[in-house]
Image 1 (tube, one colour):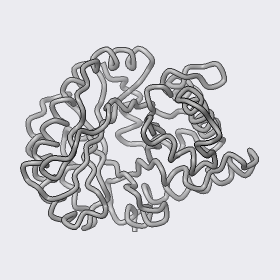
Image 2 (cartoon, one colour; image 1 turned 135 degrees about the vertical axis):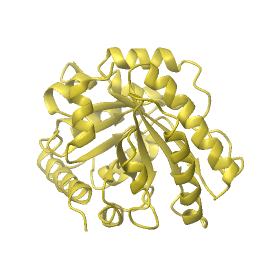
Image 3 (cartoon, one colour; image 1 turned 120 degrees about the horizontal axis):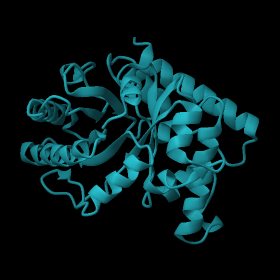
Length: 298
C-alpha cells in the first residue's frame, strides 16, 4: 500500500527530487568531480564508503529538507546505509521530510535499434519487498534512447511499463526514465515518438496504478504537458542529462508542470576539501536555483 502522506507530498509539494543514485559504474566519476581521485582509494568497499560519506554530508546539510527537496533517489547501498545511526530512508523522511526512492535497474544492455534497454532484474521482487520494509516510497529505472528509431523506442517504453506493473504490485510508485541523449541528432523526432508511446501505455493503466515520468528536458517547451496531466501520472520530472546546472535550470524554467530530478547538476560545485560552512552554503545556493527552476516558471 502506497504511503498516503508521501504520495500527497510527491504529487503536489513545491520543490524537486534529488538524484543521489550513482551506482558502481558512475561512482568513480562522481567522486572525481567531488575531488577524490581513483588513486586515493582501493577496491569497491572503500569507494562506496567514500560515496556514502558524500551523500550523508548532503543529506545532513541544513538546506536539504522537504521545504525544497521533495524526494531523493537512492542507490541500493545508500538505502542500506545509516546517517547518524539511523537507516537512510527513515532519516530522510522522519528527520528531513524528504520522500525516499530507490534506483532498481541493473544497468543497460548493448545498443540495438538506437536504444539501450534495461538489463534483466531477476531478483527485483525481493529488492522491492526489502525497500518497502525499509520505508521506500517509489523506484527509478533508466533506459537510454540514442536515436529516433520507432521500434527501439516502443521496446523501451514497453519494457519500462512491464516492470512498472511489477513495482506497482508491490505497493510502490515507479519512476519511468527513458532518457533521450541530449546530443542525439534526432532528439526532437525521438521526443515525438516517445511521447506517443508513453501516452498509449498510460491509457492501459487502471485506477490506482500510478507512475511518475522522468525525461530529458524537451526541445519544445511544455512538449510533455499532456503526459503530466494524465490521471495516472503522479509527477513529471526532468533529468539534467549532461547539461550544466545553469543550462538545465534555464531550460527547465520554460516547462510548466515539470520539476527537476538532477544528479550531477546537484553536486557539480561540491568538493571534499570544502569546510562544512562552505559546503553547506554551496549546496544551499544550488538547491535554491534548482527549486526556483522547478517552481517559478518563465
